[in-house]
Image 1 (cartoon, rainbow, N blue to C red):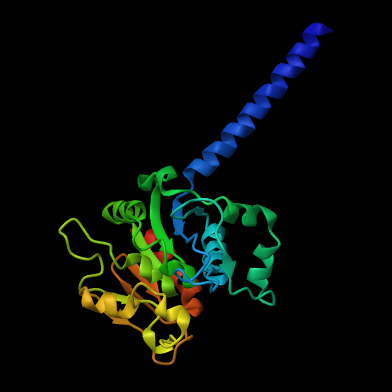
Image 2 (tube, rainbow, N blue to C red):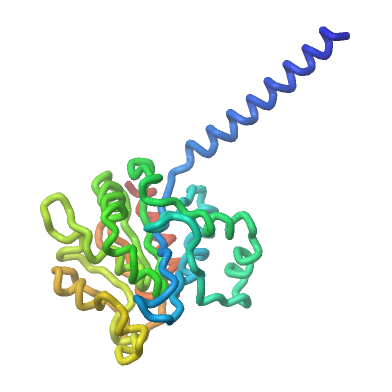
Length: 255
């Protein structure tokens, strides 16, 4: 009887080890994409609330994970991030708002020193007012992004997420977007006289143009405007989030 119990236990352990190995292997074979988000809760030193744009996170996340990619999140400080611009009538947003596993991921984002850049095929910067603070000047995140790009990976952003690309330079000292088409949220649609805008460390549009980029945007706005220049994929506003995600997939498949 004791021998039979031992055999059953051995078989049980073997099956579990096999299943565990299968799960690990499956996860390990997934190509990884890194989402960059911000910990900033206010516009600068003001008391105005700032946040990461929820749809600019969940729409690309939904598309990329369904396509078989594994997505990780990194923020300057790691841990929880503020989210905003919520629209519960949107089915994708509603799906993730009530997904406790996903929301827990946003409460526990990785810090830059936890990220091994060589593991990622693409990096994506989401927007929202919070994206203007903490991310652009973070040297560790810059290094991660440059490593991904130098490894022939894709660099992408949407809306104010483009602020995270402003200071990026290549090996030769030029800005990563030098002589390239790049989009982001333009000043045309900012309220430049408002207090929130006065807290911005810079104008995305002006900085991109000043540093040799070819800033592109739609005069109409909110019409899925995005541009692709090599392995740089950027969108103007939330309406381009899905297209940017799809173009990331296409770019990676065509490598």
